[in-house]
Amino acid sequence: MTNVAILFFLFIFCQRLTAQTVDQPKAGSGALEQAGADDFRQRLQEKITASEEDTPLEWDTSALYVPGNTVKAQPGKISILDTESELSYEFKILGGVPIELSLDTQYINIAKNGSLSVDLPAQLTGYGFGLQATVPFFKLKDTYLRARVAPSFFTDNWGATANSFRLPAQLFAIYRPSEKLIFVAGIAASPGTENPLTPIAGLIYAPSDKWVFNLIGERPSITYALNQRLSLFVDGGLSNEEFKVTKAAFKGKALAYKEVHYGGGLQYQAGKNIAVFLSAGRISNRALKYRDSLGKVGIKDSVYTQLRLESGF
Image 1 (tube, helix red, strand yellow):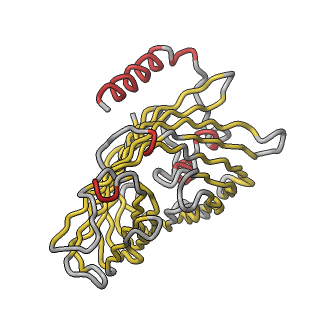
Image 2: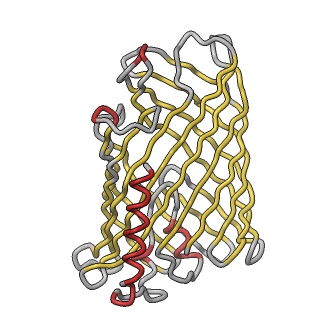
């Protein structure tokens, strides 16, 4: 992982040295090309609600904590700390086609208190390398096509084995009939998982400078701006990721962590390109489940707190 991170930063540095030869995006008409529909960053929302300075290098990170709660039909308790991070760099090729490279990581800490009938690892880990491109959708006005692939490894020890390798991909169309409205529709594929295909559909509507309705993907939200720095929001999200376990009892088996959460909080614009999000709410439908009926640990509903940071450079 250290060598990969070094190579990633060296690539970014070289790209920045040659940035003068790349066309920079223009405000307004070029904003959509900088937009995205990724569930982690929701960049489409940002691009239609704010006029931002170009920030080709971005780092977004979040941590969601669920305190210890009782396990269903078994003794013991489980607390979860779910962290995600994405470092991305965007540039243009072939006269203006936006390309984004990213390094994504996920770490889930599973703290067990008491004896469980199902053997679980102490952590789940994942990392991947994303490649994304956005092009005009034939000659249709204000319509774009976005494709993304992300070779990844999901296991319980940061390993990189053939067994833990996956190639998730997304393909979707973006249509912007006005500056305040964006539609997105497409499909996400994750071969080798229990649910290999997932539809992508939704919209983002910003009727005024105060309100934004972001109804896309796995993290929909509604935001109301109190002023230029402080906003209120309600949002939701879910997890449904699979990891290949290396523990002896279930070596090579797929373990899924599933949950649905919904709540609200505050967004603080700490700087021109730095935003901090603090939220809390309820988390339900929680389970750690092995495929092929090898065992399941259902966890009772609880509360959660989440801290998220979005920054650009």
